[in-house]
Length: 233
Image (cartoon, one colour):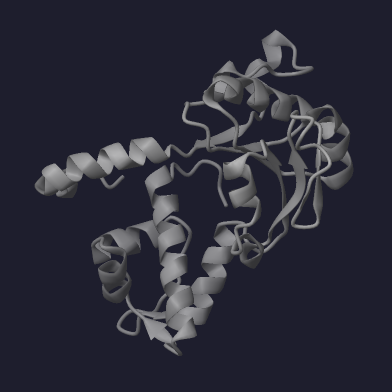
């Protein structure tokens, strides 16, 4: 995929939605679909579906639509779901344990390989056949287990520090469930000379804020017409 493409993040989110729809269609024995059908199920326009897919190539046949299995395979490839991804979870309170028990991750090649918490009462616990470890062991663990991603499930006041620990350990992707926004540019670049910081590939951070989602829901329930005016990107 060309790195020069300017692909909106909203388009990537919609690809995830299209993939979920295709998986459901396949489970129902439906072999073909169309941009109109995908659009209706995803609650977007058919033009938007075609535009999103066009960023990555041509996948359908004019007048015949898309083969479900083929488009599903291509979306999995585009989204990087054809290779294994090793994930560690930082913070093994109720949220961290709930994430560790989530049953669907393995369907998409995501494997929880390490659980970490500094609380002595949690270190040594067995969760999903994994032993909770102290973060002091994270750097060696990341290196030996080729960890790709770190999930943060700690209190807000600890999230930035935990993100820094993940960066220093060599983790390239962070999914943050703490109710605070982690800014990638605020993370220190270990071993990178200041004059070469622009060349640093950096860390990708996704912030998941449940409370923000509830606030958005409250607003759109009171102002349903404004939802249609959002920029689709």
